[in-house]
Length: 255
Image (cartoon, rainbow, N blue to C red; front, side, top):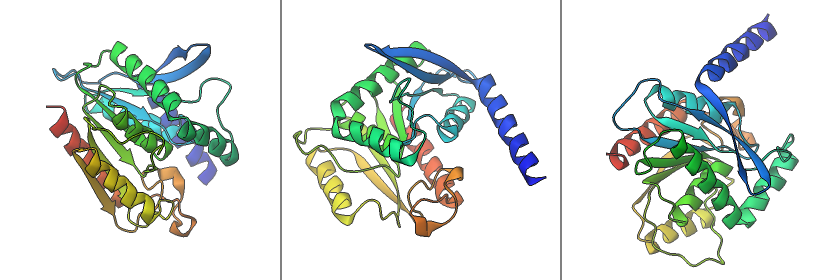
């Protein structure tokens, strides 16, 4: 019975996504990319857009759910495909390899983000009212969008990596930055946290970093389990608080 209910819920969720999310094919030179666009379910004068950067396994249920939720709130949303057709991870080992490549080649990561931003604008979003959000590996990407000063008003990193490419000089950061971080996330060392905060100071960024109690890595993802000792777990309270923090951030930067 439990398996049946789980399958039914999954079917209903995917049916809802099918009504809201539209697949979008685009490319980076010869590499085919497959993103998803969600247009506002209620029209607003704002026409603000949100680019969503998925976690290390690529486009997943969580990133699609975020796009669906944002569309219901009146935002244009686009889920970026960073890896491209033929490169989608099926295991954690493959995900680590793929995400590691882009962390080591940030210019290529930034290019994939930029291409996805173009698709978000093509879908109808106002190019002057764009925010980038990202989860885990995608959170690292959101920070790269800020470091590259892509044409966005702000970025939000949910339990993302904080380290930067130290071969690149620290420069002025124009987009506003919000980092939502699990207070017990041991995947980000104290050295990385201090280094990130110092980078924000030196770059003259308008930044804020929120800590959430009893939260570890992936605290926004309902499919992350509930065992904090594994370092990856869902925390409903932290997920709701960080989502609200994001919406308040949107109200500020997208006026």
